[in-house]
Length: 140
Image 1: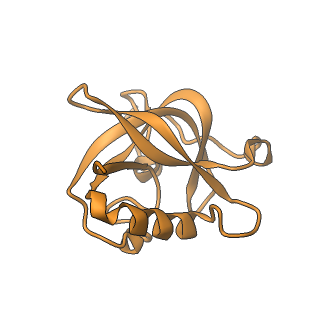
Image 2 (image 1 turned 60 degrees about the horizontal axis):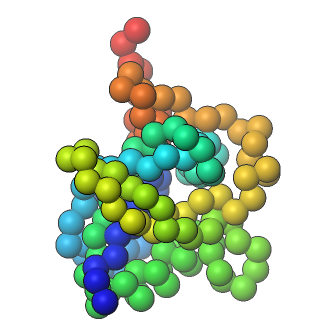
Image 3 (image 1 turned 90 degrees about the vertical axis):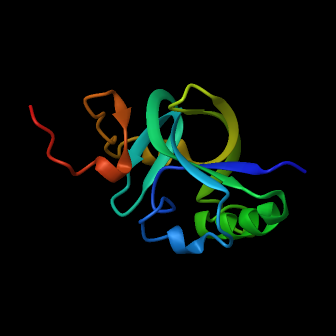
């Protein structure tokens, strides 16, 4: 079994409130992006299928830590917990800023139609949608 990669874009990122729920230390964390549409749900974001560049972090987890990590993150994201899913886990192409492409797990909002009217995270001057930077006042 190879190491697993996880793309996170909201409260599971380093320094964010749910970063403490990672059950093991990563082998590596690096800036990355996926193609999706990012909604601002107030205290947390959600992504759905789309073509915007969403910036976040790519976490690489050791092979022996994958099952514990999947279980912990599935619980945090409300996926496959016996009721209606909040998010669903998918493997998606993820790109690091050195030009490499990776397959990574990412959590997408389970019911895109339910958040269609919520605000989108605005793109920064580089064209990335970044939840951590959503409230920064950027120069005009």
